[in-house]
Length: 347
Image 1: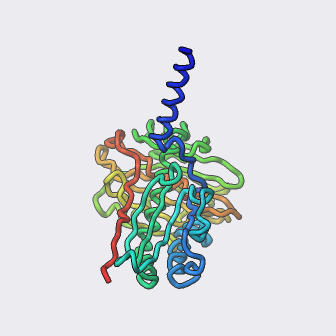
Image 2 (image 1 turned 90 degrees about the horizontal axis):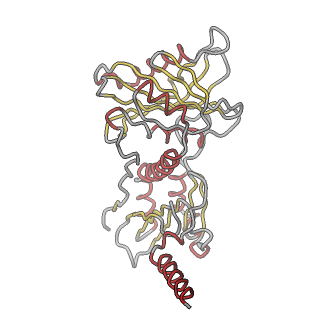
Image 3 (image 1 turned 90 degrees about the vertical axis):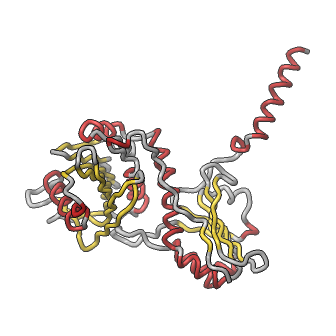
């Protein structure tokens, strides 16, 4: 009888634990990175309001050699939004009701039906305001979900990353950096290293290099691209003497961003091997190491002929955010999530 009482206590404790901690009962979110489920009435999805949201999500990712949309889009009617579909990783729920809402707003919740899930709800009194609102907030909506996915990747890299790249970053630049674990080959140069997966079909690469900081002019497009071309020409030659890596300056975009609460310059675009047929997309972050008065650049580039490249370059881009400079080694790695509790003007 005594043993039965003990087992009774254990079972009650387990029941209480599962009841109190709902997270234990939730499944892991389904879907692949950058997949999006839109929950909206079927007929509304085909009208201008639904097309406005589709156009936001259908925006092409810049800096790729062929058009590739920012997200993979699926849609379901609320009547079909069941226990199979509600565990999707990224969900947008559209709710248009003039009796419930006097203004358009959006807000997000995490882990409502599944672990590592984000649901963005957009509520509006009418379709016209909804269409105007999502169009006006295109960049906010895209940036929000991109950062959510980047944070998921950062968490994965924390536990599973290339030891080779981490060791090179620490030894050569006194930095902490995590790259995808399939990267296992390397080449070292002066203030430079190049690492690669060496895959014949979809090669992903990480480079890191440094040069002196010379003031704000260091961060203009011409200066950054000139430095890139100089390092790449010296360190990544082709198979013949007249072949070397160069930047396609006509297809390159730069913009200031914030990383670890500090200024950084993001550069993305296309690279090519001069006098050869090789090429592909790249993305880099240029940041100031104030302790050593230098600029440190970390870059990911892809060579994957005849393959889609969005997923490959996004994975490398997420890795760039793991770079911790000398003064930041204990910094929080999670990216800031942009504000999405946005409210439109009242009717």
